[in-house]
Image 1 (cartoon, one colour):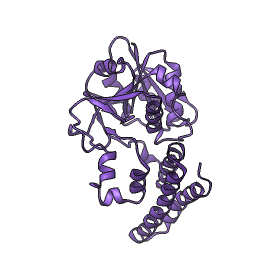
Image 2 (tube, rainbow, N blue to C red; image 1 turned 90 degrees about the horizontal axis):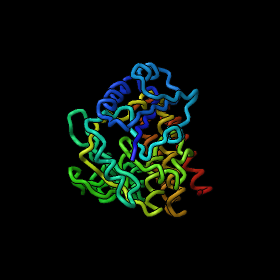
Image 3 (cartoon, rainbow, N blue to C red; image 1 turned 30 degrees about the vertical axis):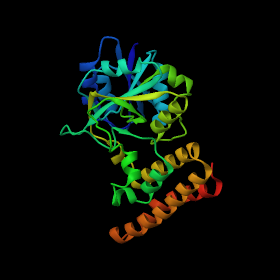
Length: 304
């Protein structure tokens, strides 16, 4: 089966060059590279064009899910590798391709490591989030007590990340999937805008159709993480993350569980707002978390 690498960029000039150089170095003859840019305002497009790879330059930000779907539609390959622009391949992709060729497998993810070569545990693979896991996340319990059972289970702390196996949610930063599965489940959900939880939702919907996901640690990428977020304001980041979390909760949890998540966001936001006001001696946290509380309040009142 042929494969294409799809990379979605947004103000990625500091990373996309190394990412593309590694792709071109490790690509097999039948593997192509396509960059979909979401209206970057820096030198991202120049870095891409300098390397001669295929490019779709959007005049506006279509969101991560929208850009992924755009890239898949522009490719004719059987397999798609979704790769973050701040991920640098250190190996070839053949093990992922073999894993995806197995019956009933939707796709496979590889191992993400940091600059020192240490595996990014808790991120490389996760289990699909439960309402309890998200509740502990929004209340700050996972930060204060990271070893709690819900967080331990969610972040796969029980797994040996040097061994391959079946997993629930490989990280979207290095994720290969079959085109036919993408078509069957209707692609990535573009209502997760502009980013976050769209890859989780994609894995969940494929699993609901009876497909499985594999983890292949012999495929490795060095991953920086969060490169484009520094150019987004804190208020926007909070609204995007909580908004997408609420979207996921409303899609996949029972109404009562969704209400509990909404209520947890309200309580957690009040605590973060008060703590931020004291720590920063500023009223800015009111603006940051006020919008989040409005989102959660609508979720509590109107549910789905």
